[in-house]
Length: 207
Image (cartoon, helix red, strand yellow):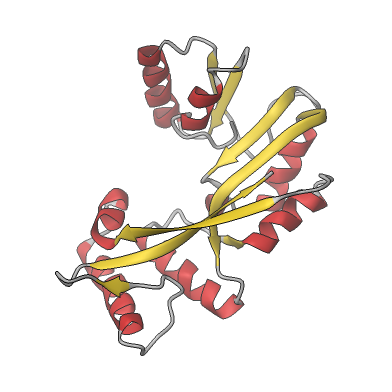
């Protein structure tokens, strides 16, 4: 589980795997995940601190390599996917799951600008076709990409990232302008009967 955070995916995979490794660069996230794994009785998850762009594992070391909701933080996602492929045995499997941007580059740029305002650690969401291309360029064959849209409430999304009030106001103004038809953010926002904003994010799974 590459860029695992607290190892949510790793802990789920542990139910059917002999051993799972959760790798992340942040010690605090790993410590939290290790505590959660202990509470769940997942004693077959190893938590390792390391760099996703230089995985500290031998070639072909794993049957399955996954990365979940992390690619939009990578400075060089192609390098990370290349490392994931290197560490997967012949005949093994790779899965990349993340938010994806609109296929129109201008709309995608607007989406990524707002995502970076909310969370400065955000680098860039890829379009679904770019995600597929990353895996193909890493040597994978018959890559399948499935997408699904999810509507989310605006305020909890901001609270999750602890976005400062001034910045939150700037994002809200952009979405309000989109609702009014004066801008295109790619978030497809709408106001409900109480005036609260909802927006849509698209998720993709590339396998």
